[in-house]
Image (tube, rainbow, N blue to C red; front, top):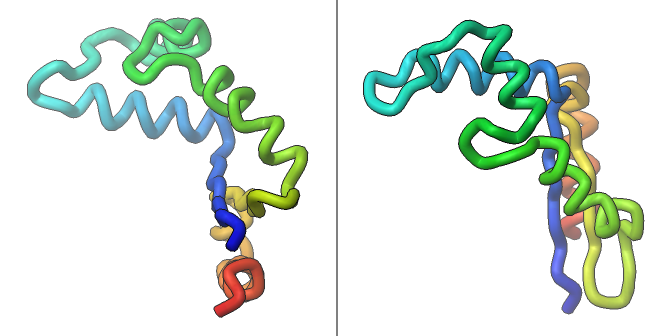
Length: 98
């Protein structure tokens, strides 16, 4: 059968703040600069794991196609899950045919 992919996205600002908090509280290898510096480095893709924007753009063609002969792609946002988790779960059930 076709491969099914679930792609979960989150607001870029929320991702940045969350990642800053995570890295700045690590004991080893953590980020020691200010949030302003972190934000600039994050936007430029200089923080661990590279650019969030490049990552999102690398998946954009598959997300735009959504469904084809070889795969199905479902896009879910973190914010959508927060606002109506029941609808998201129902959509997942339908998407996965379970």
